[in-house]
Image 1: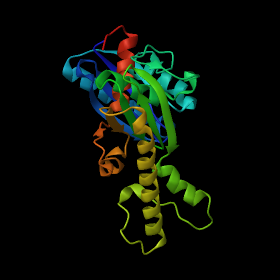
Image 2: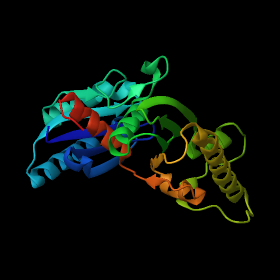
Image 3: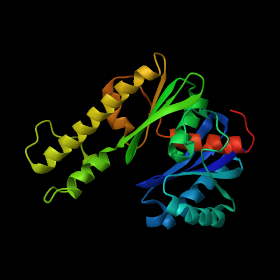
Length: 263
């Protein structure tokens, strides 16, 4: 496998890119808000951009792999990839060939995005490692020194916190919390909500990481990914490396393993 079309289908948006196995490189990264359900045409254009990047690099696209946490769209993605790329779309699963092993029961319940994150952590960083992935939900997953994915935590992301304030009250607005940092001293309802969402999520982030760090010990690789990792993780001062392409790299690594590559 020279390169693969990789797709990360999340709850709020979908990211399409080209993965090259040499160096686990990501190119032609394109995020589509709402994914295929809201913007099929944009998704098709993103696939074409990935193939254009492969052509420019002189490499063939041999595979298409997807990590999906939205099963309802999987068939639509199969059709689109077949139409645009002439490839059969494969999916990251618990029983895919993986560079780590599961250390807890019922791995089939594990989200494909978390599996991809652990695949990338195992190959690119080795264990022990912690991956924090901030999306609609935030996940905290731990890899042991022996390569075992042995525990993980799932919590609400900042979008869920902001939306819940609106959905479960009569008068609070839906604030676009991501557009600006919260005020130091709120003087209106929107500012009060921005402050509460930011502080509430930051506090939960710090507390969850603090509880998990003793389980992997000193010297662990700490990696953060997801659209808002760069906003929330550096202020913690814990030495996390930010890699916004980690999930895509993991999807590509799983595609490579399926093709018989060794990482």
